[in-house]
Length: 223
Length: 289
Image 1 (cartoon, rainbow over the protein chains, first blue to last red):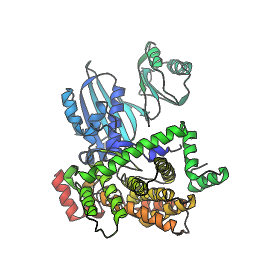
Image 2: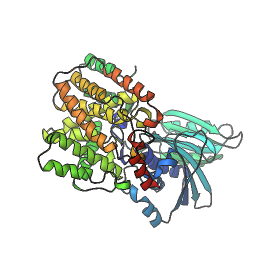
Image 3: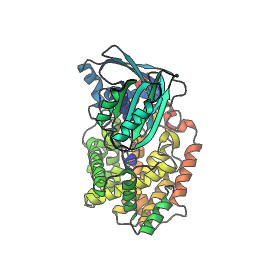
Image 4: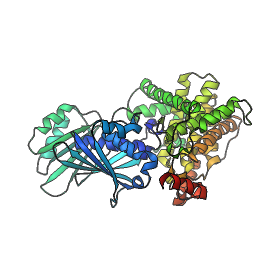
């Protein structure tokens, strides 16, 4: 994979660490996007180096800033605890051991307004890059650096072709396609990474299809 | 074809283009955009850099444990007295690097280059030279495009992470990038830029990553200041005609091999080097209990 000069001179970010601060903010923001909708409480369970060194690197401020929707270069990031309190968002930090996970991994548990609980696990990979590795107990692989469609659907024949044909009909080229599921016939995830932004009409149309639970579009934002 | 310094130089010769332009065109080919959009994105990074080289030079910023708070301001006040040993330019460059490190540790906004821990070196050299020599912004942007492209070769073939390669991979590579950029600003040709890059990396071979209490403060701030100076003197050595019988690709491979052979204690774990000294342990205990 070619390396952009802006991955070398960049990201523009709040210090002190691209993996422990910028990556953590991005992880929080992407996790909140995937959780979808509003939430009143968040638990952050930290694994590995995140668990050992989070206090010295502002990982805690960055994660809270991220779930509040702040970007990694937002100068309000160090004030995220106060901002969360002002907005009535409760949060807590704890430590967890996630076997096999990368050094900088967090399990983020969202308590949604409707009463549901969503659990998203992601790792900071360095240089501000991240990967969401688990959503509600199902393994996945979401890097969020390209325009991405994340669909949760029933595991049954024809779902994938419905999704890909809808994306194709909007004129978008599929760069990467991944499918995962936990057990046969239950829920499955389809991830599509595209070269260009996926229009919101795609998710609107797909969500009306029986068997599709939710469709989230992730835009990586400008460089 | 893999991205190496050799492949970039071959490309440059075949197409009759300067190295920075080859890098610019590769960027557009791989990631889209135009010359104008790449220049403009780099200009916005230059602006962030110019803010971070100044911010802590006039006011001390709070950092966890305040290990380096006020270091840039003190360096600036010392320089202003006009009686430094190593001269105006070197002291200006060190102050600028210290300021970026302090802004970074204080959770201010910086541009990683190539990492957050080493974010002071390239801005200190490029912005200070730009001011001292009244260099137009467009040329500074070209220097950043050039040095970022050289950094990308290191990312492709080795590492710029302290946890993988030690400080030589972070601050060392930043110094090498900055040295090449400095030569470009001084009007040197592409081969001289690459010589400066190689000399700077050779000068820092083996430097370990040993942050006190795991914080990006000490020795990171000192290493940002000293590696910014390494960049300047390496640029001068190259401009003065020094060549080195090692190619930049070989120097990067050597740096990577050295990094991999460093014990874990010396790769950003705060378990070795100055982080393991009694004084450092005392600081660690006073901050984290």
